[in-house]
Each structure stands twice: as C-alpha cells, then as structure tokens.
Length: 210
Image 1 (cartoon, rainbow, N blue to C red):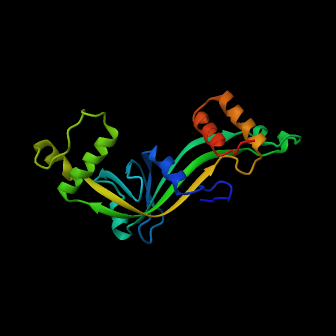
Image 2: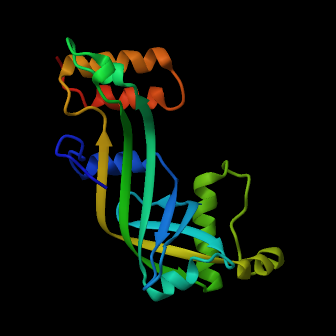
C-alpha cells in the first residue's frame, strides 16, 4: 500500500482509534511457494493494542497456508468515497482535464498467527467474540461442558493474531489546501451517498483550521 507523507497516520492513536470502531476485514495468508494467497473475509475482535481474535470453519482453505507460514495480514478498509474530477480540480483549472481520486481509510496489520484447537481456549475465544457482537444478555458463554457447545466446537478453529507491524493510510486530500478540502467536504455532504458522511468527517477532522 502506497502511503504518501500527507496521508499517513499522524500517530499510533489515530489508527488505533479508527480500528476500534471496525470489526470486519480480510485475513490474508500467503503460505510458502504458492501462486496466490488465500483472502478470507471475517469478523474479528481487536484488543486495542496488539492482539486480534477470530474464528473460521475447520473446512476453510486458509489453514494449510497458516501452518506453512504463520505470518499473515489483516486488512481493514472503510470511509471510502469516489471524488469526481471536477471536485478534485483546483480553482481556475479546467475540470475536464483533471483526474478523479478515491478517499479512504485503511489499516493493515502485519501479524503472527497462532491457531487454536484446544476446546477450552476456543470456548473462551468465542465467548470474547460474542461479548463484543451480541446484545448483552442474549447469549450465554460458550462452555465445553455444555453438550450442544461440545458438539459444535470441533467444527471451528480459532486464531489469535499478534500484531508485529502496522501500515495505516488516511487518504483524504491531505495534499490539498484548506479551502479545497472544505469544498470537497461540502460536496460530499450534498451527495450523501454510501460512506460520503464518514469520508467527509475524515476530511474535516484532518483539515487544520483555516
């Protein structure tokens, strides 16, 4: 992922705060000597520091690759919006000859994966995920002593990811002047489609006061 000086994270707090509001991404495992990696869309739970937990079906094709090479990538992207050429053109220039761009936030976590097969550890991992995703009081903890849970646990494997590196990008017109960023923010507000509101919030958040 290309990161220009003007769209990199200002500090670790910026990307951590953003990632704390997201819990769905893509786990990428390359294995060794393969033509293509396996890319698995998945929900996950992030601890806010250096650990991520998720689980996948035992039949998932990602397992042999993680066994060959435990180094994996978890990538999360959001707040994206298409910025038309006319919006991206500086005042006094011909918009018909300008280029459009994309705004987005993306965090890529370089990780070491540990596969979890122990029933007790899998139960604890699932309970952690349920506590994050389910409404309070709607789902009891997963227990190895419960007959139904005991039958279901062999069908999944857990993954604990230890974060070893981070690449974070917040591409929201950081190379434009304040006035142009504010104009693009206004146009995103008027269009109000998809993630336009989230992208506009990012533009304004990263734009210094004029």
